[in-house]
Length: 129
Image 1 (cartoon, rainbow, N blue to C red):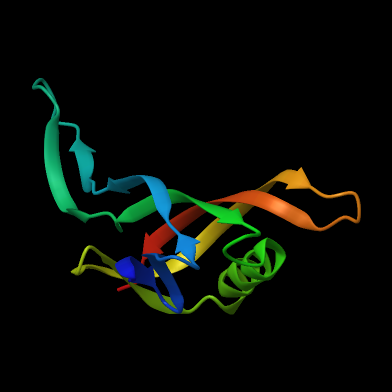
Image 2: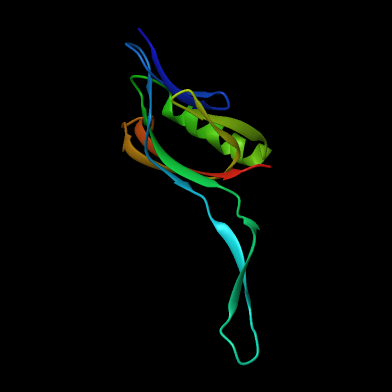
């Protein structure tokens, strides 16, 4: 039995007997963009100019029992370099189109032969309009 949690491009977040690719600490930021207008002998005024591009960040865990951590890290690096937009879907909800702006990896456990046993990836996405 497979439970699909969501996806980002070709990366599917799922839990099953043989695969586990999940995320945690998902943070979503939406901001407005404002200008300050100076007015002689009065308080400053604030003018809304539009919204900033949405940003999303989260962490994924990569364990050798469920995937090849190095191959997953390489795929994420490629996604940064290709600068293509992908759909981010969480729990069946389309969050939007995003580029993978930044990724970092932490090789938590490495075997004697240099094979990564467990790694954590930190992803920062920026909305693509």
